[in-house]
Amino acid sequence: MAHDTLAGNRHRGIPRQGASPHALIHAIHGTLADFLAPQIASLDAIDPALGRFARTARDLVLAGGKRLRPVFAYWGWRGAVGSDEPVEPALPAFAALELMHTFALVHDDVMDESDTRRGRPTAHRIFAGHHRQDGSIGDPEKFGTSSAILIGDLCLVWADQLLARTPGSPAVRAYYDRMRVEAIAGQYLDVLGENQPGAWSVERALLVARHKTASYTVQRPLQFGCAVADASDERIDEAYGKYGLAIGEAFQLRDDLLGVYGDPAVTGKPAGDDLRTGKPTALLMLARKLATPAQRAELTLDPAGAVNPADGSGGLTPAQVERRARVITETGAPARLEAMIQERVADGIAALAGAPIHEDARAALIELAVRVAHRPA
Image (cartoon, rainbow, N blue to C red):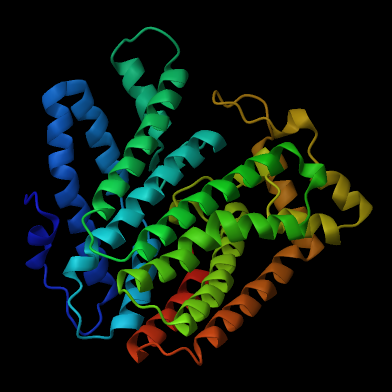
């Protein structure tokens, strides 16, 4: 496998006239694989244990997923440069966003004590399993958590290294840094909400959605892609900002619904985790707002009820989780959330109407708005 990212991907044949989702995702995957191969080899040369550590990180990065952040960055770039510009020089920048995303996912799974991600064991569960298989001493869960934190850190360093391979203006780094700060700020608010549910509201849940999800999933990747194109049109930046915020919020609101009602076989994550932990999502906050006193009492977790320890003891039973999901439905909150999603999709599409971007990008972003807002996983 080629060590040079660009050389390793030129043969993959990304069409200059836009890109199909499959071709683009294939190119991102190839860029990541080409970059990671020498990174793993250098760690493996130090010690075989580091090689296994790095290969686990690689497997998490390449395990699939929607690749939304690179895709939005690509279309943000394509909207500014048009259909004739070759994409290969920009691929490292787009792929770097996927490494940053892996960092965020791994740390998020540690905080949520999640067992699966994309239908596979989470990083901390993988390393806890290694600890047991190797007959190591100490607590396997602590080892798993410590190792997963380091995996996330490594992915963030790798993201910086890959981004450095992309020529661009200072605006590229500025948007990248802003994206990271906002994602961390949103994650902290998310953690804070779980520990202060009584102080939370629909409005504050939406604030979390804007920073934890909308900013780093749609809004900043689009603006980042435009910066990679070295475009400085304020009209494009403003349109991408409005579109990204609206569609990013729609994405998170759909995620709230999938977290309660999604099919684990499709989402790759257990259903009801948000209800088990009492996470104050917009869905739960809206349900409490619309609930009768009796329904509100059923939806209120006492501190002990929110515990979901790693060994599976305590917390809500599956029957209790199912009951809470039914109560939420009865409040009318899911239907109200669906309406909020539709409003945001309409607002996002409207934001593109007068933007001076190329038509293939406009069409792709409209299609993406509908797809991410109505996705099954």
